[in-house]
Amino acid sequence: MESSRARRRRRLLPCIALALVVIVGGAAAGTVYVQARAHSGGGVVSSSATPSASASVSVRAGGEASVEPVAQPTVDHGVLLAEAMASVTVEDGAQVSVAVLDVESGASATYGNGRFDTASIVKVDILAVLLLQAQDAGRELTSAEKSYATSMIENSDNTAASALWRAIGQAEGLDTANGRLGLKDTEGGDGMYWGLTQTTAADQLTLLRQVFGEESELSARSRAYLRGLMGEIAVDQRWGVSAAADGSGWALKNGWLPRTATGLWDINSVGRVTVNGHDCLVAVLSDGNSTKAKGISLVEASAVAAVSVFAGEGGGASAAESVSATASS
Image (cartoon, rainbow, N blue to C red; front, side):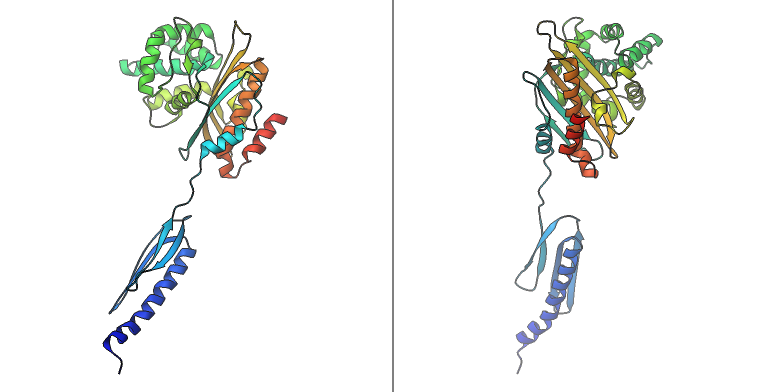
């Protein structure tokens, strides 16, 4: 005669079989956790789904079965950027550093961590500080300040930059405001030498976030004003990070400075580019270039390499293909 324990086991088997069917079907659809528990009066099944994760199945004593999530390897964009930069030719004695951020995902990567002279890219910082100071004072920019700002950003006019450098309080004013903007490794140049301000690619990316991002010390109106000027750069200065963009999808500021003592060039470029539907913020800094032309080629190849790390995820060319295309153009 069948014992009561045997009858309970016989009733339990169909429940376990049902649980395993649910587990297998759910795992095929991307389910990463399914739990089934048999009771004498029926079965209870609960599940939660997270696509793109793998799972392992286990059955515990007492009829409980589960699919446990297995962690997927994360993408290391820093490694990808380093691999892309390996294809960029850097002449002997030159140095380059790059920082890039994919606006949609918020992922970023940096290559190199040295400090460089800003040359004229500091003009973005000068205007950001001026706008921040005006916000604090509850005032609009004067007509003279607006005129200087347009000339300084669109035409890289040095006289206009010097006027606004004085207006913000020179290095002291820049450094104080940069503390609020989140720039940790940028130091204003001595006296009127604003072009010798020292910075890092990572700090320039932080500044670009303040200009192009939503979470900013700058008001929406201030950000729009500065972005607008960066989108109207003089034709002869439309080089640099724009090399990585699709068509006219860019806003930038370049800097170039021949060093008197060595005859070598500092060449920098910062801005926003759009490629394959991705908006990226990019900062490329370099020094030790033998000529301005070689420095521009280095900055442009580096920008293409940096952006390809993220643009490739949206179906664009690979980093190696993008760098190769730039080098051959």
